[in-house]
Length: 259
Image (tube, rainbow, N blue to C red; front, side, top):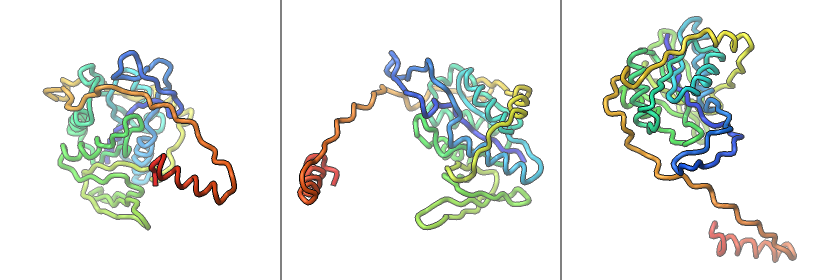
């Protein structure tokens, strides 16, 4: 059973993001880049499916510049068998739909039985690629899953999605697209053996022309990025508790207008 895992390289959550001289982009110097955390759940789940079945092929795929190979190497160090790197300046400003189109072309070339991605990337929080990819492929899609089980014949997958008070359970025919939510599993740390072995695993470079994408212009573009305004100073309400509570409620209702 072949499983394709779509990952994205994003700034580390501890990074202090700054807007660059170009107001449409962030300052990338000094940034530590990582696999988007939700994508790590996707990689881990693919590896668990392979291990449970005793055979299979886990392929990591990502779009982006040369530095994205670091993220793909991390997936390979976790245990993925090989990787595909869609690396083309023509896709530098790709929106979610163009990204999904590129991934769909890779999926058609690889012919996996299952595609798993994270529920959303933590940099832009769009959360759209998984569903768009499924739509382009004509495959069923289940998002934000907390459980999954592939049947013995690899014909269907049963997934559970958390809802208030329980799990919503679906049976999907394969091939299908799933997006992973926190709680699906606990991603493993790459071992030293895995890190060393990742250096020998294949990362296939792919260009836009190889995917026959045609018009590679995004339909959605960034107009400008703006820093968050500084947080106003807090206010301490003095006086007796009874009077302070009344003043707090009044301030929340009339000044802050949050209740």
